[in-house]
Image 1 (tube, protein in one colour):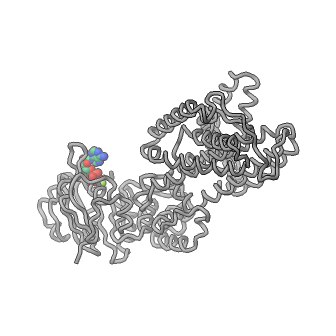
Image 2 (image 1 turned 180 degrees about the vertical axis):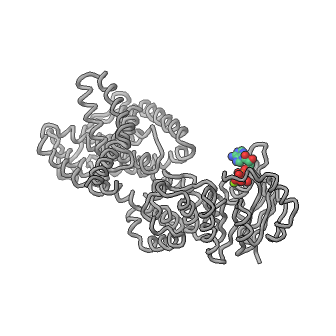
Image 3 (image 1 turned 45 degrees about the vertical axis):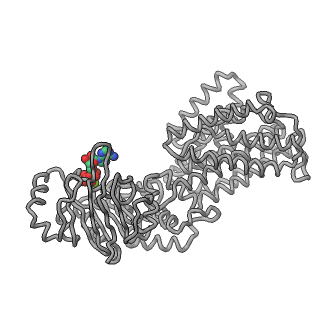
Amino acid sequence: MRLIRIGAGLPLLLAAVASFFLFPEYLSLLNTLFILAIFALAYDLLQGHAGVVSLGHAVFFGMGAYTAAVLAAHGVTEPVVGLLAALLLSGLLALLLTRIVVVGNDLTRLLVTLGIGFLMLEAANQARWLTGGADGMSDFTMGPVLGLFRFDFAGETAFWYSLAALVLVYAFLWRLTTSPFGLALRGIRENVRRMPAIGAPVRRHLATAYTISGGIAGLAGALLAQTSNFASLDMLGFERSAEVMMMATLGGTGSIPGVVLGAVGFSYLKDALSAMSPKYWHLGIGLVLMLSVFVLRGGIAGGVSALLRRLRGRG
Amino acid sequence: MTPAIETEGLTLRYGHFTAVGDVSLRVEAGARHALIGPNGAGKTSLVHALTGNVPATAGRIRVAGQDVTALSQAERVRRGLARTFQINQLFRGLTVMENVSLAILERERKTRQFWRSFAADRAVAEEAREHLAFAHLEELADRPVRSLPYGSQRLVEIAIALATRPRVLVLDEPAAGVPAAQSESIFERINALPRDLTLLFVEHDMGLVFRFAERITVLVGGRIMTEGTPAEIQADERVREVYLGRRGHHGAA
Ligand SMILES: Nc1ncnc2c1ncn2[C@@H]1O[C@H](COP(=O)(O)OP(=O)(O)OP(=O)(O)O)[C@@H](O)[C@H]1O
Ligand SMILES: [Mg+2]
């Protein structure tokens, strides 16, 4: 497990860079994959590392998307500024919500986060003057990144912009999960009852994790709004919340490279299967999820590390 | 001298059922104090209430003279009151080293750091190794706890508690569930703890209790029946009755 965790970052990065040259017609799809990978990583800090679930994580993604869109519509068109604002505001929203999310058990958490999701969706729907309601927001134009790189039709700038964000988030989370704080989160996941008996402030840890996770989810949302020039209600809807959970599960919750692969694999499947028929999409993803839980045990990452163990056992 | 632990009328009710009733207990500083009683006597419940694992229904608790009744479990740990569990409460997917390191990092409030690797913290690793050496767990340091034999897991239970650097350690049946030969060696480790660490331990095996305890409190039906030196308790007819009458039930729960 450890080997993959440390070693997989570089090959993944190389594959991402190579895809720029191999699939020049698919840059905007690749851009979306990077963004979803960031979102999935943000979510998995909670599910995979701290062991707490959330069914409303798209709230933060949507918050970030609208923050970026509203800022751009009001003249703040430099993308990086928009990203940072989205990070801060979504993190702040998460921090405000921790009080009601952190208490209770997994079931109450699922229901509460689900409820928050519905409330925020309706709030965004009602606030037409700000969000455009059901029509979404598209009448804004992004300036060049850092005043230097204009977004182009081919999606080259967007590709590098989102990839850079993914690399930063990946490195940040990898560092975090191997840090004392990351160990405390794993402690919560492994035995939340023991934590207070070693003097651990469990709620504080969870609040911190939730805030960081919400902030990064917001950053992902902002990236999508900026690079697609669009923000809409589905960005904070239930479906998106459920999908991020599936990406983490498919990739192998708790493994950073696994979750990245999960986001990519999930989106690819969704694309390929929906192209055939929406029926196939639901059937296919249902089977794949079962497979990743019951057969691969721990998704893609679990499958790979089982394979590595077997190879090593033979060699 | 100020007692290490002092409770006044400590009571813990689960609904209408009184698991701990009006217990006033005094554990001297540096004591080797045993808490005994038949199954269901309320020993574990008393440990829960004492350490804040379950909030007490009534009564007061002082640790080294300081009233901790209103404090949370974690805050009591920070005041030097640590415990182990009758049924293992370990971080099963983490290694032995990580289990102990985590307790040190929490004590040092280093778990706020997220920009450096915990494994690179020399001071923490060194201290963790000391606790592991004490618990004879050095060789198992890098194994996930869930892969350890049960006896070793019981020692991890103790090593984690020691890593909080307690002044008072409450051990709830530290050798529960391990074969007799191993309970010996677990108690041998407990006996090797520094004398200025106050120990209150729950134990069913009378042989071990009489050997290692200097003071014994007998709990029956949630209330203190009597308290005394091992010799006094051994000679007490009522204690013998309680135990002889229920001998068959003394399993590890
Ligand atoms: N959470 C709970 N809710 C209701 N009753 C409980 C609860 N925990 C314990 N009890 C009851 O309280 C009584 C005391 O239990 P406790 O575990 O404290 O006994 P004990 O002395 O530790 O026993 P043992 O020697 O078996 O460990 C028992 O009758 C038990 O059934
Ligand atoms: Mg008990």
